[in-house]
Image (cartoon, rainbow, N blue to C red; front, side, top):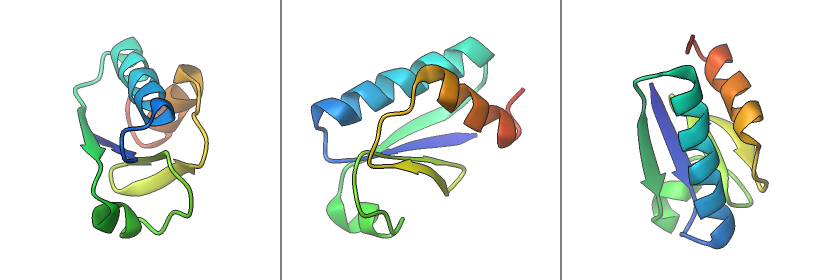
Length: 81
């Protein structure tokens, strides 16, 4: 499973990264957490606001910071136990 944090490194991006790490850890998943910080790469996801969250290449959130529990639910929906 691949979790991507889409953002340039702002405080909200860092909070989203921390929340994603908590959610992955909570589920005991083996997941790669990747920070996508290049504007040209972020634009490929077609989001209008950062931070963004993509799981397995699918955008799940943009322009807000989901809680660890929300991210946990997103991971479960994408096949994480």
